Image 1 (cartoon, helix red, strand yellow):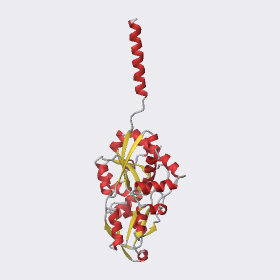
Image 2 (cartoon, rainbow, N blue to C red):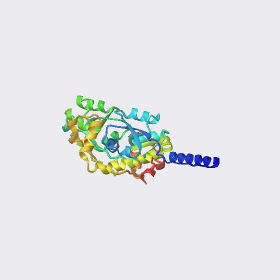
Image 3 (cartoon, rainbow, N blue to C red):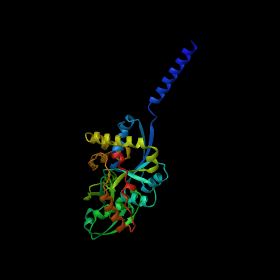
Image 4 (cartoon, rainbow, N blue to C red):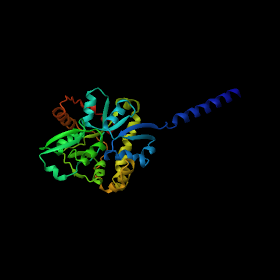
Length: 299
């Protein structure tokens, strides 16, 4: 009788342990830093529509107006990943900061001016961030024009400089560019013959090592969001306006890119931007593709 009781207890205990081991793990939290750009739409959409929740993943998103503050948060591990640009990333990787591109985002930058007639002038003052995609795109947009570059990190400060007439133009990401139009500025499309966007999502090596499965799930959610967004443009616009704290008047004027499922930039593209960095920023950039790109989540 005692043996039967003991055996029964062992069986029950084994069932309990089995049930515990089969239980889904608690939600893993990913902390991300985004800039106020249309690139963030798939991530914000996945949050708002419960896509990440359905994948048992919690994603926190902080919106930064200042790229330097976002970079500081990334390097101090306050956030696991961020929206950044390849120009800034190259400088950081070469400086020894361990982070990798996991996907190339889809972006929309526009040239803002108070007086569009000034775009035909032989000399222009442009507000931009020095180690940034805005510097690269300024050269692309104003090729053949003498440009005096005024370095300003804050996007709102750049808008103020244009509005006050202290500078002529600035390269500004959407949807902030459309906010500038409400204040009397004019936006002009920038034509760049590149196969990839200069903006990317990066994760720190620490996050990739410690939160690998969560980051893989994040990329699955990103793809699901892109697929759903293709048939919900109104939802995308509404989410961008609400989450980025923009005025609803610009909702229909936002220039949206064509969102694509996850991919990483090519080695040739990174080499092109490295050459630009060396020529313009006078910095030696060594492009070790594997030290900058982690393509495992695209597989």
